[in-house]
Image (cartoon, rainbow, N blue to C red; front, side, top):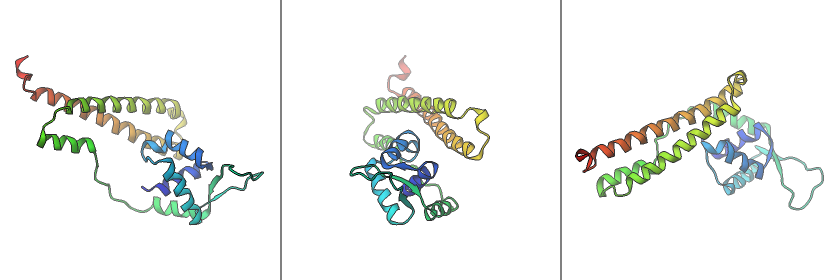
Length: 185
């Protein structure tokens, strides 16, 4: 996925200013495609130059007034083309897994604390996703295809967080079972 396509998606859902867009990224798209505010503003300029978006005319132009952007037909075509382009899965890149591999070579002092910290983070993220599901996607409101697709994206996040919670719990139990003092208790 690319940032331009994430921005086009967000703007097709609702025309927005750069500031509104960065806030929406922080609350939704940013859960699975993160970006800094600076990157979003830079990409808005590129998309406008490419003819994919335009700033909506303002009622009373004023210096420093925020621009609100909308997607042009060329931007919609670009996004539709991207949606229909096959893409192979990307390999997982995880600094935590790399740290564990390195700990196998140099020793794992402090590894347990980091795994516990990650477990807490994933539990909190799972809880947040489940709250969003209850609030935004009750079963009776999941009848239209856009709502079903948005819910499926959220379910993907829920399932990933459940995976990490389960895996980290297992990893911590494995560390406990192989600890030098484990057999003495």
